[in-house]
Amino acid sequence: RNLKEAGFTKKDLGVYILMGSSYIDMEKTMDDIIFINSLGAKAVIASIPLSPGPWTTRYLLKIK
Image (cartoon, rainbow, N blue to C red; front, side):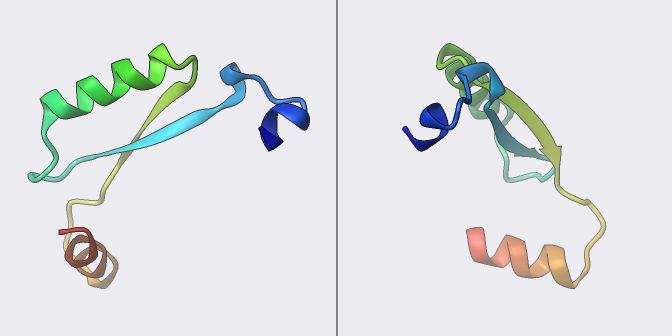
């Protein structure tokens, strides 16, 4: 509601979807993209770095 009152439209909205890790199911991701598009928003694909490091390790441990 706040974004609408500020003048944003559905086409101005983007929803990020993470890709690039083995635990992310491609079929579920496609379902997510279709759902986001059905709402009139843009699906934006973002990749998770594949190289291990402190940031990726902490992130992956938090979401599992």
